[in-house]
Length: 265
Image 1 (cartoon, rainbow, N blue to C red):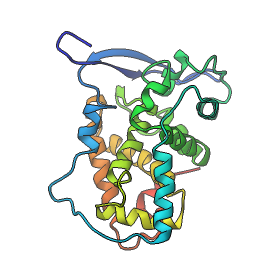
Image 2: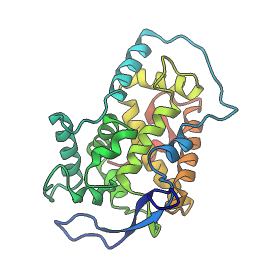
Image 3: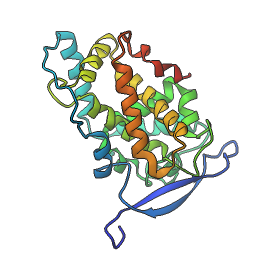
Image 4: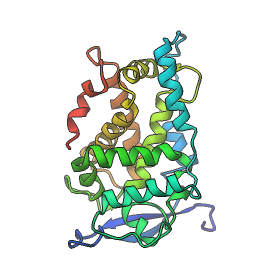
């Protein structure tokens, strides 16, 4: 933290792609200011309510109640670095992203190459919990082409100062939880109601929506020619587009969302 009370945030300048057998490299620089990724600065972007939000009251079907309860149980699990299951999931993420690069230790400077803020990713999971790691793993294993394109920033004309991939992923999990009202007994917004219908059709709807959102966010990033300080604005734009697509009349499955077409396997 600097003398003015701002926190130090590491941002990354994109360098050349790595040779075979090495991880994607970037050179860290330090700037001062309130963090745009996790905590107070981020919650102002994604947890805020707008005055024109529609609040609904409705009854859930037994199927919707069961699906919501299962998803809420996942959301309630915090990441615990002392649990073997959680460590193995984190290692699984590394080797899915970098299959030819050995992870020297579960706490390692290598994690910064994926876009974590430090050598211990557990400190970045506070905003999203264990489900944010599950989301990243699902993305990597089910849509590897899209995952790797985003991880290595291979699409479009990239900014000099890019968003850190992994921490952006945690933010996306947190944003979706807030947008869909998933931490209350029943959703109070129209998009939350609609999402429960999609969830009752496919219990992996949240994970698929996460992948869609990540790809959509990157598309918005490129279209807006955004840089590091524009991340909050890009997230707002992404949320608005998601809400618009969820309200379309012909969306009966999460795969019906127009932005699903952005994903490639």
